[in-house]
Image 1: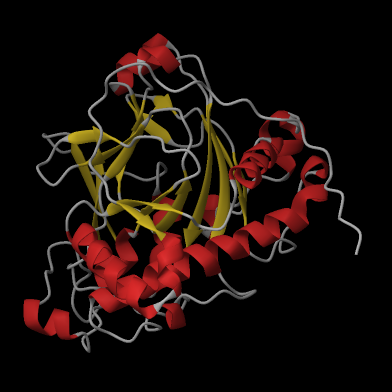
Image 2: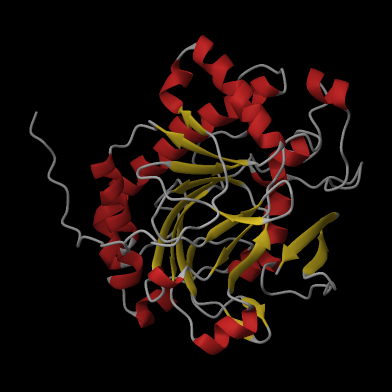
Length: 363
C-alpha cells in the first residue's frame, strides 16, 4: 500500500527554553504505556489518586505520539494564526456569548483582564466532528490529521486517565469513560492558542497576569517551551510548570472535582508574562478539553466507597439538589468568562456565582 503524502505545512519554530532558575512545581510523571495492563493501572491509579487529591496536575509520557508527530501538530496549530488573514478570521469567529461555545476563533481583545486591559490571546477551536463548522481555507487540508489527533487525545489519553481516576475512587474502571464518551455529539474541543506579547503599560496594569487564575475542565496540554503557566501549590504559592519535551500536562478540572465529592481537586492555574529571557516571543499552545456527556448531572458519585468513607467536601461543590448538568455548567462558564461582572475581592480574588457554583478568579 502506498504511503500517504501529507500536505505541506510551514514549520513553526518555538522559543528557546528559559534561562532563568524558576521555582517549578514538583509534579509526578506517569508512563501511559504502563496502563496497558491491569497491574500497571493499579500502580498508576495510586499515583494519580494521591496527586489529584493535592496538586491536581501531572505529566504524562509515552502517550503514543512521537516527537516528530507532535512537532507536526504544532506546525498545523500555527496555521490558523499565521496563514489566515484577520478579515477571514472574523468570518469564522465563534458565537461565544450567544451559544456558549468556543468553536471557531476567539479573537484578541475579547476578554477583559484587569484595569481596562483586554487580552492579547487568539485561539481556534475544533470539535471532534471536524465538519460541524466550516474552517478557513488554509486549515482544510489538515482536517484528516486533526480529526485523528482529537480522537487520539480523547481515546488514548483522556480515557486511560479517567480509568485511573475511577480506580482511585474504588469504582469500576469504565465508570467515568461511560459518561465521557467519544462520539459525534461530544462537546469537547481541540484548541490551538496563541498568546502575543503585550506592552509594558498593559503588563503594569495587569500585574503581568495574562490569564487570571481559574479552574477548568479535563485538560490535556501538550507541553511547549515558553514558561508562562503557573499553578497554585497546596501551600498557597504560585509555581511554574516546567516544559518537558513531548510530554503532556494533565489537569482534571471542575466536573471531576464535583463528581468525586471534592476528593479530587480542580487546581487553580494562571498564565503570566514569561521570564525575561523569553519576552518578545509568542506562546503557541495545543490543548484538548474533554467534556462529560451533556446530560451528566454534576453531583458526587455516591456509590464510590471512597466518597462514602471520606465524606463529601462541599466547599466548591454546587448546592445540593440544584446541581447543573455538564451542558448547563459548560455554557455558563464560557458565556461569562471575561464578559460578565464579578465581585472584586480585597485579597485579589474576584468571585461570581454560575449555575449555583461559586467561581473564583485569581489575580
